[in-house]
Image (cartoon, rainbow, N blue to C red; front, side, top):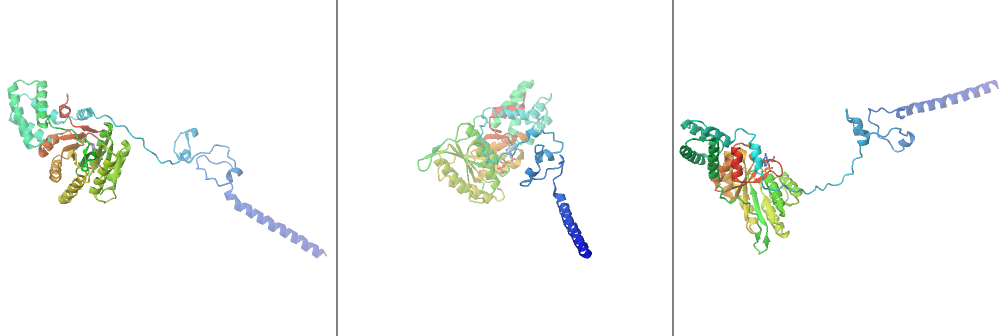
Length: 408
Ligand code: GDP
């Protein structure tokens, strides 16, 4: 009997010990996941799981990841806002600056440079003795500024003659004389209007003014097309853009962005598609929309001249199925000097250029390329690019340009 009682007591003790072990080991397993009693401020808070908030109510307001993570940020908690829901942004349509007087900016930009063509010439002409060496230096200055051989010789000849007649030379007289002679070379009577007037299409319908923009890639063709769209919109015209540079998707995107900013629609085709068909569609769209102007940005790959000829020639011919092309603007980078002239010659063989756009004039103090390229093509410079800003395109005005070169 005693044995039975002893056995029962041992059994009870054994059961109690076993159940106690299990509970203890359970508690041990739970420990690592138990919430900390006081959360550290520097550590990012763990993402709460569903229901956790109810079990461990927070006394402090929750801190966002940004607040905790930003080293040294003293941003008060009150400024932290929940991120706005992603709503597709509709960019507001911009109102471009008026175009009048934009060329004055060139003066401000060139006045920072001490090496402009005009300033160099004035310094040389102010020397007490204008001997042969000085005249040679004047000639070199003109050639270095990309004026070109023939115009340089003409200018030096005329200056020599007039300085002789002048006798004594005051700085004002010299400035006046140089101004007149540079203006004579650039020409003040050429028609520098960019023709964008609407006309009559082949079927007797109203046709928008059609402008083709051509030039080597990198000269600023797409940028110029975009800036020109802004100028036209600022003048109250409705514009359709044709992204006929189908070889670079980025070019079409770039043009479309320019268009969206001023509210001009962009007609584009599939990447690698036929540029002529995009140009054709753009004009068709312009006619359908009764737009005022259609601007066509073309591709400017110069690796094979024949390829370029075929391509550009075709674009123009196909567009002409709708009616006349009113302007073919050749975009040249003013900083490339003689290289620009070579490009100009090639393009002039391919299409009839009606106007020149000299871009990046802000990047050169030379400016003589204006004279050289007009001589080369017998076509006037109509627009100049003065920077990367969206309103940095100015109508070319010979007087303002020469004044910028010579300075005050
Ligand atoms: P595209 O390949 O001929 O179409 O050339 P883009 O329009 O893409 O322009 C090439 C680069 O030249 C871009 O970085 C433009 O911002 C820049 N650019 C265009 N015009 C001017 C200008 O008048 N001045 C300056 N400084 N940069 C310009």
